[in-house]
Amino acid sequence: MTNSNKPNTVFWVTGIIALIWNAMGVMAYVAQAYMTDEMKAALPEAERALYDDIPAWYTAAFAIAVFAGLLGCVLLLMKKKLAKPVFLISLIGIVIQMFYNFFMSRAAEVYGPGGMVMPIMVIIIGVFLYYYAKKSEAKGWLS
Image 1 (cartoon, helix red, strand yellow):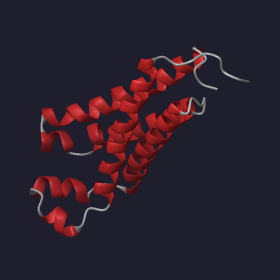
Image 2 (cartoon, rainbow, N blue to C red):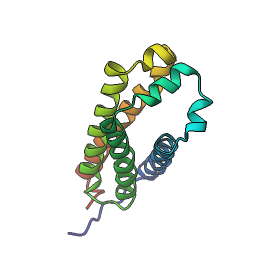
Image 3 (spheres, rainbow, N blue to C red):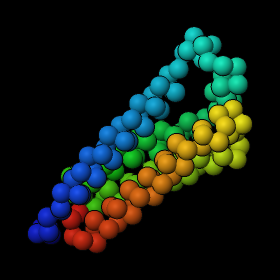
Image 4 (spheres, rainbow, N blue to C red):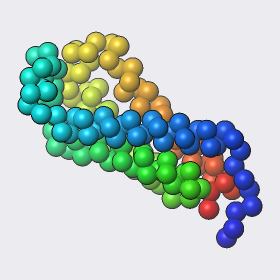
């Protein structure tokens, strides 16, 4: 089926900003996943302990969240309906990751209340991107 509805400028701006956001998420994942012992040694002791205690399932959820988010943005910009389920997969990864951050790690204790701003933003943006793809599909912008 051919799509005759053309997305507006806000769609493209939102998609490009989201792509940049998710690319930064991929960079954060890579930086964390490939952090050397020397890099960890330079951190304050409390932060180093957080990194040393990260379980493998958290790292997997982080990877799924950021790589699915990036793929979702590419699919959104390609106007593909597949963006919506891919954003849902990313959101599930985000929820798992943030559950660990909020309830299982000592991140709030180590970073303080200000350190929780970014995780909350990640959740909000993940939810937004899923619903934005859903809305874009409903408007006929995705095929």
